[in-house]
Length: 126
Image (tube, rainbow, N blue to C red; front, side):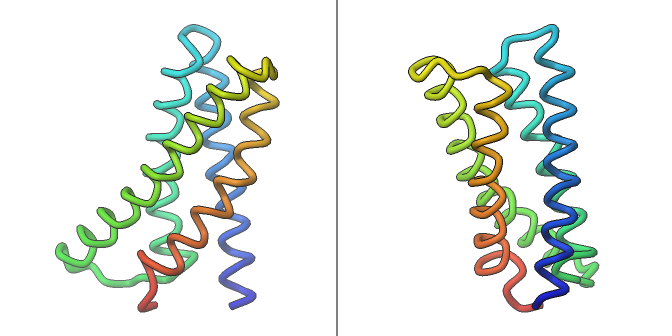
């Protein structure tokens, strides 16, 4: 369990880095909401691969298992992605926080939500 949690944190940091890099690159030439949505998509794909292989060690190569895991994983990420987008919009437009600061604050909550969902619903049999 400790090794799994450490792996999740490591790859969570990597996923967050992928998300931030994508967001900040895209934010320089497009609306922050579009940048955030595309950053979310790229980081979800990255996270699925790393979580499946290295964190929760799901070794099944059966298409049906991969499809089931991908659907459940994506469903959880859609929920946390909606939270991410809502938090970012609320923080920037209502509270008037800087977009970068809001993104950092919201990422802490999103990482925790994603671990719980992945552990309990996606890769629970590993």
